[in-house]
Amino acid sequence: MFRRNILITGGAGFIGSHVVRLFVNKYPEYHIVNLDKLTYAGNLANLKDVEKCPNYTFVKADIADLDKMRDIIKEYKIDGIIHLAAESHVDRSIKDPFTFARTNVMGTLSLLQAAREYWESLPDKYNDKLFYHISTDEVYGALELTSPEGIESPFSTAASSDHHKAYGEDFFVETTKYNPHSPYSASKAASDHFVRAYHDTYGMPTIVTNCSNNYGPYQFPEKLIPLFINNIRKRKPLPVYGKGENVRDWLFVEDHARAIDTIFHKGKVADTYNIGGFNEWKNIDIIHVIIKTVDRLLGNPEGYSDELITFVTDRAGHDLRYAIDSRKLQRELGWEPSLQFEEGIEKTVKWYLDNQEWMDNITSGNYEKYYEEMYSGR
Ligand code: NAD
Ligand code: DAU
Image (cartoon, rainbow, N blue to C red; front, side, top):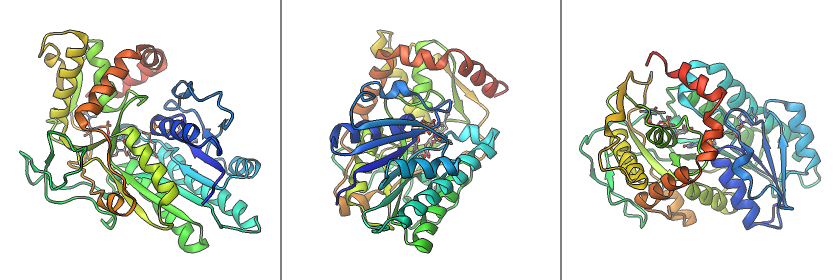
């Protein structure tokens, strides 16, 4: 199947920038159009290495602007869409749910409608078209933590970590009922439903994937891993929500980008795939790994930054455990994570320490003020 003009939304963000880089480099025959509003989370510095490539175009636009979506999709004759643009941070959604509904729900709907109008106007209509929507495991809600000490993980992918633990017997599978708890996950769930409705109602070829927590270079430092790496470097407190007992399943971002590539080209239309690392960690354990790695790479004695750990008020409605079962993707399309967690976290910490200018550009000025307001009173 040949798709030539691909629209990637949210390409200036964390995951989007890795997807854009992969597609621009791997598919010189494709034209990659990166559409991004450049909110606080969008940063063209994430794409410096590809910005001059002849098969790459950047367009600044808001996905909730329906007329603009119509114009862009028509102008670039888009035949494939990989939709990542979203408001993505749970804490912000608790403070400002309306922005999440506007971008994640109305924005996705505008993009769907614009694609539908353009594709239905073509002689071959939906033939060889695809609307691929990137979603999250958070739409499934939270799992119980039935094995607080962790049990041997039932999965044995080559990339599973030495730590190799599962904190319960239950996992999110593609048929798990939606049960979102935060305004963020509720808005992502609504957008997933709209995507599936466009398939069922209008026959639009769609795919939805739900992925676990990503980590790696270029992540905005409001998220746990880059925030903590930066705070350790600056000797600032490390705010651990609640007791640090919540469990997340971590996947290296380039492995997510590889999965998106595989699914975009080989995935079954109207299907759903879960993407995850089989790599569950309690927050407090991952925090100790981060501290140890940063201290070692900075030449500090072991345990030097432990004193920065500060237990703070828990996140409202904090989901206890996420764990993705991605065996369907492994079985049907042959995807597996490529990196062991220990390798991935080493690479990640090194990247942030080697790219302090990138970090300092983001954390200076307005963001610093915002962050202090957001976290005052915790
Ligand atoms: P991010 O916040 O780093 O990037 C989001 C990007 O979307 C930014 O470049 C921003 O400028 C852009 N954007 C926001 N609102 C927009 C609008 N109205 N119009 C156009 N562009 C807009 O997010 P991320 O972590 O890279 O996540 C990308 C996608 O993947 C999201 O849909 C998110 O729900 C999903 N996801 C993220 C994770 C994760 O761990 N980060 C895991 C699973 C799924
Ligand atoms: O599961 C996929 C989701 O992962 C994505 O859909 C979201 O876009 C992405 O932000 C991420 O959500 P989380 O809420 O899990 O990620 P975050 O980095 O915000 O937090 C990870 C865990 O660490 C979570 O249990 C909350 C906790 N935490 C987070 C921060 C920022 C802290 O204890 N302290 C902190 O300062």
